Image 1 (cartoon, one colour):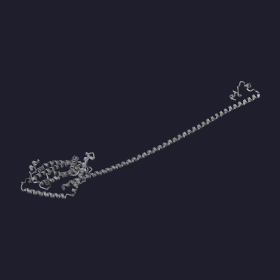
Image 2: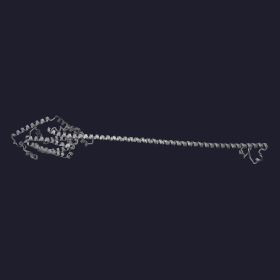
Image 3: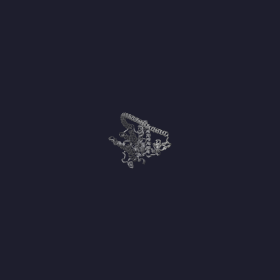
Image 4: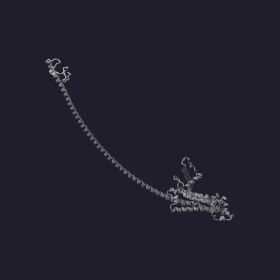
Length: 462
């Protein structure tokens, strides 16, 4: 009984918490939302629409809580259906925001994935916020009527006990006397419950089977994204790779996994290397068919516009690249022509320099040959002069030799004459009977040495 009385207070607190969560989720749902809010009246108007939907969601949750307290099962279920649709309205209204801010299809896909994941989470959070127990969940699902104790509680007393600001409106069910009429109410509630359960089953059975596969695939992709975020988180905190924990073992449903998942969404982290397929049917598994079509059409239209813009940008980039390549080719051709001209000019200069060097070498060779001829002639003249000088010296020497020979001959002749005269004198002396050692009067005063006077040309040695 006490636990059931806590439903409104828990609901009112969760309404505020859910409103804050939704607002924060919208602000971090896509990479460029912070910039989008300043992009003109379209974004501004859309943002006001989002805020209005958030207010509607809070009002609907409060109204549903009041219906639960009053015991109005049908009204609670009707409001619950509206509560389930409101997050998808938010997602649908958010598409223009993402469309305006997304620059590429990849950014739009990331924004779409996050906002729809948020929308699915918002439904679950709304359900959890209103859950007063298994019985209340069963009532909302149409599987069980409200408990008698909850039905007998008065709305005013419940509001006073829980601090509910505005007492729920009275209904026929809540003001009816406690008589057997309650059995009819209970039976009607059971009938409505069974009818709602059958409709829910039919709706579930008609849902495409690919949604369930896509949901599992989306969960797998999200798990991979959470693991990548956890690895990135520890890579930023711990430089040493050996000291980092192994995040590949993270599994959905564990406390660590949920903790990293909340951190990832709080940071608005997105792995640029991930390539999740563009299939968001898993996030729309709980969306009514008509709402799914509206949201999906809006998304596909926005995606088509961005893809068309990207294709146009790609075509322009390719054309620009072709122009750039053509300009580069033209620049290359001109550079090659300039280089060819430069090489030709260098070759011409080289040939001119080579010819000039050859002519200079020939001139030097001619000068060298002329110098050599001149020196050879000079040497030949010197040799002729030297030969003439030698001949002159030879003639002089020959003349001097003849003179010396003539002088020697004269001396010999003089000596021979002296000897002849001496012999004649000796002959005369002998013939005249002169004494030995005595001379005639002409020879007086002369000293004979060995028969010869000292005045003799022989020097008295004969």
